Length: 118
Image (cartoon, rainbow, N blue to C red; front, top):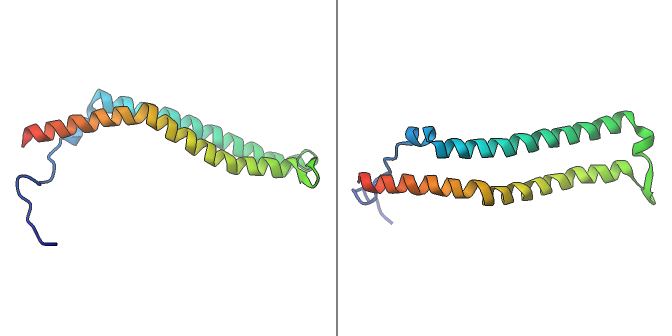
């Protein structure tokens, strides 16, 4: 424990983040991320709105028994919760396959440029 001052070896990075933000790699990363997130968000929103509309206007359908006292409304409500876990797992898989390799390349290029600048 101590109050060590920064020296040249552990100084804060001097990366040019504006240049990184304007790079083609970063634009590709943003485009891939947005394409996935916006499309899945729209799909989930539509799925939720359909569920709410069914619950509000299709009482007979939603109260149809499936097994015992479990009805379609309950099954679809539980499916809403399951959707959260499914989308999270899907995003993690997508990020590992598509986003992380690009982000790693960007980070490595920034670190190399920072090391050369020192």
